[in-house]
Image 1 (spheres, rainbow, N blue to C red):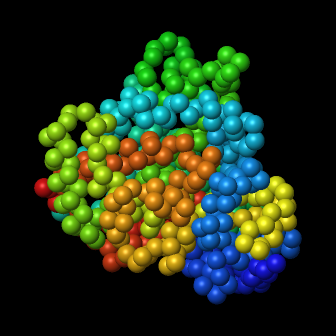
Image 2: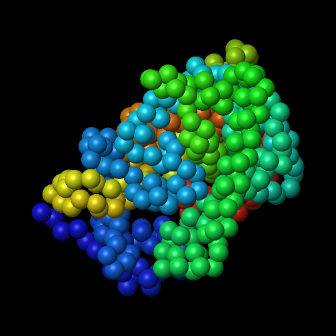
Length: 440
């Protein structure tokens, strides 16, 4: 048996302020010093195994996935804010929900959502001011949120309600980050009232969604959006989803569906600003595709260069930059032994930049995906892997391709930043994404 190197609790506490701000450099130093897996002691009886071994990640997420479940970070901590839906449930409940919801995200079904998605994208891009530096992230964050709104609740929506919902989902994420990175202050979050305030906001969000559901049912309209698909879905016994479960699933769609996409789009536009030749290549491809077809789905599926750029962007800056799992039974991998209940945290960020897995890992080289991402399936996990791979991966890719091609077809993008900065929260967020846009 190999002994897994350890990082002491004292070292963790010593670097706690740095970890709170950005844990990635701390983890990188440990990977460099200890190897591709190390044990971090974060409490008296609490430890986490950090890993950047792609083969081990593939083993856990795919080959032996039945022995692994998500950690309490998602099944308990995140549940407080988004409920027990597809992202946070486990076992038979997850299987039942996945089977029920999956058809709503088939490519054929997503084709019905392209028109409202396109409208939301164009509307948000009207806010872009030319020839002056602007932070693009707020625009893209609103774009991604409004895309989910239009896809879920097509037709009339109350802007005030949706703005409130957006505020609540983002506020909940910030609170969860504090809970995870400062576990020693949990007593203060509880006694000081911060935790209760966030949970009250979550209840408010649930009421906003509940009202939307009731309005749709009362109208008896069929709009062909995601809400209709969820309302019309039936379990094997013929029953529909109960209202509280439906609210859980919608909350998760809002939380997971807009945060990761807005992050990925921001990093993509920053990388395009630094590499203008790829802007021109996407623009030329889009001109050809637009002249050949008026069908949105046909154009999206044929946008190979744009897809390469997005895939390379998510390699360098994966929005879901960590994947967590806990083993149910004792397991072994590569002469490493794991007792039941080990907290495993796979650094997608580190795997995607591992020098043994990628040529020029720090360089932006979209051409590496010229043959598609499947050739890297054992080391490329922007949407996870295995049975629990993100159900909305096609939705996200369609949205991002539409957004990138729409913006590049109208503007040339120039960088107003020296380097790409990041803020790792629950997802990998951009920081100071200042760009300047020039009309084509």
